[in-house]
Image (cartoon, rainbow, N blue to C red; front, side, top):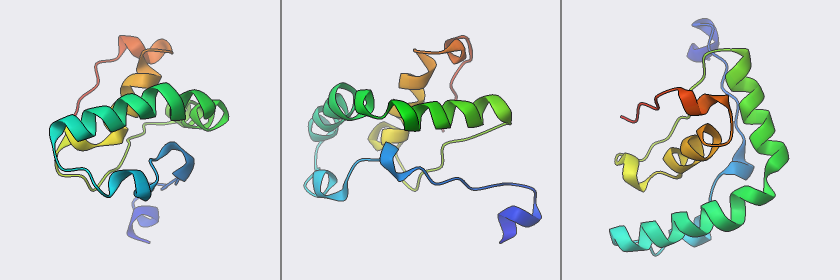
Length: 98
């Protein structure tokens, strides 16, 4: 509700996530790297319509990928942002990961 009061719209696109069953046993950086390699190679190429939806939002208004992960290197949204940036005009935009 507070987001709406501030003029911010939250759009949930769960298909661009990684199913919890694939994330449950992650313990090391290597585990995360293997999962994200799989995500980029297998999951994202199948999500063209949902990626197009995210790109349309990015083009329409200022947007951000929201995540609860404390470490950006362990967040799939970092990979999603780079995936989109590398395949669109957003490649010219510096991605700021905090």
